Length: 292
Length: 270
Image (cartoon, rainbow over all chains, first blue to last red; front, top):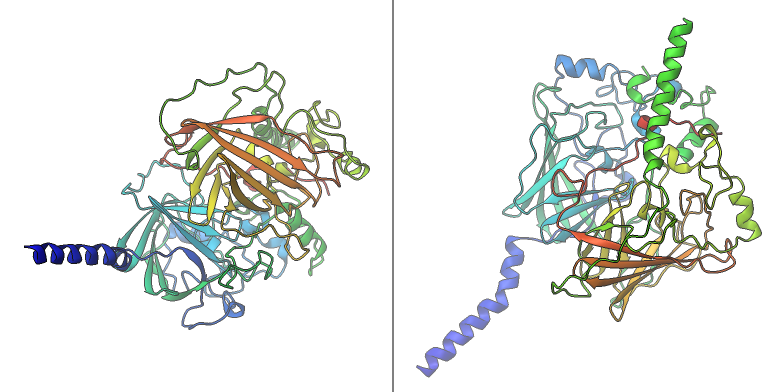
């Protein structure tokens, strides 16, 4: 009887000891700073991320547009020269109407494009996703709430809920403001856009990311993005090294940079650094949709 | 043609004035003191500030302005030169009342508000605090921005390597039951308030948060900037109330309260 009790106690202690480990296996913690690598790249460094004429989250394989989508797309005048995705490329910047040149909100998923880093923080009822660009965040709710209906007020960054499917963190989003572009080339979307993001945990330092866009008002089929690798960083390379000192273990304190689109600076940039000589790209003071 | 021009002008004027009036009408001085709230009997952990907090005007004296306090210290010559170029529609703490066409508040063209201004512009802000192992995250409804208040032992950057930020660099620590946040390295282009109060890149902000009871959080903001002011600008006590969910929420979260330039359509002066 005594041995039985001791044995039970040992078994109980073993379960308690292993419980955190088992829990960690079923619900990985993706908290940390992450860099999205370009499709097909393995452990590439920052210099190559976002380079080239592709959007790093959805890729070039955009499905055919609907008639509504075609009409909306035909109004875009992007600065991006990717001929497959861009409706037209006009050499004079005065003709461009990318809403980012007015510092309107980038919205999601565009805010994650280029070389902007991501940071995830696990909170009790959500995972918060922080972006360097525009210092905005998304709430990825894991508390069981459902996405709002079609009458929800559209948002630049949408509404998001998330759950775990094994080792994959799945985020579903809807309720997007249709004024944003998806990429530098002017890919459009409607307010019916829904996104599914899948973050598969490969190991402590690597995630496999993929995104699928479904928007029956704008596209004739889902836009399935390529699988991309995300790698964990101690800190952003956009933060000057050493400014926070070192942790006791010698590693850097984590931080991501503040990367705002500042209208007054953008304005000066375009006025003063105008290769075409046409000057003030903002003088009419109207939004992209009106500048056609 | 003339009528068309006139109609267009009216439309443009309405488009320009409407957002601006909305933007600023919510920032009037207080006309009467609000009573100090009754203490809540609910138990609470004074070191856990987590939750959604709404900034109130509770306890503020009549005439209290939307800034650190009405008692702004005298400016240095450097700051006077900066301040003299500001133009607003306010008579309090400002350089005078200017017609709207001359206002040059950077918030009008959606430049980042920066800290501490985001606390009280354009509305009394909703603020959420969340605690993790190495920081307190401060989410603001205004502008949908956040700040990291690091509690992991790191020190504020003091060298010249740190790029100035609109929301600065911040660390926090507990002094008894008061959470003390110090921050620095602010971009000096931001205004401290809607009255045009300037600051320099030497601005150091101290925030002192104390949970008075379960439902109320006190905050005092003190600003020290020897390049801009001859003394520390000592703040009034501000009181936040705890709410289960954001008052203006439609999804039990913070709504997007983003400044969208193409909606404002107010052209800055060159």
